[in-house]
Structures are given as structure tokens and as C-alpha cells.
Image (cartoon, rainbow, N blue to C red; front, side, top):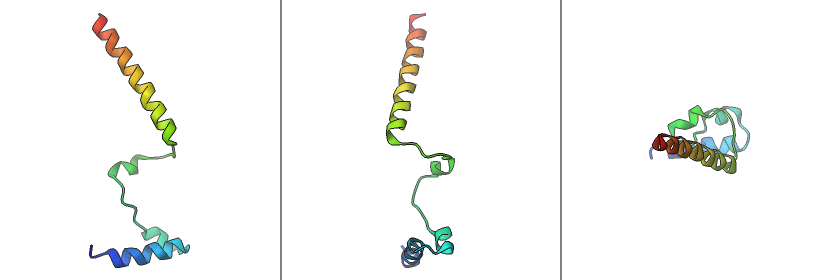
Length: 66
């Protein structure tokens, strides 16, 4: 990658506390990260997934029973 040397320098300065470099530091993540507004533990995410699955399963069961 052409920008790799510059990104390495920025990351090194950011790790040392340089405020300007912190603003320029890049984290390679997906687009959905911009939608995040709070930090949630992995166990909480899994628990919410399980609860959502149970809810959806119950709704589907009620639909099929009718």
C-alpha cells in the first residue's frame, strides 16, 4: 500500500500521545462502526442475540399455530 509508511508514522506518533496524529490514525473497520454509539461486551451481544432469536422463534411459532 502506498500510504503504509505515512500510516506507520502516524500510528507511532499517536501511540506517543500526539493529538494531531490521534486525529489522523486510521482503524480498518467496516462501515457499520459509524453506527455504534456505546461499548457493549461480547457476552451482552450474544445474550441479546439469543433473546432476539427466542422472541422471533416464538412469533414464528404463533404464526404457524394459527
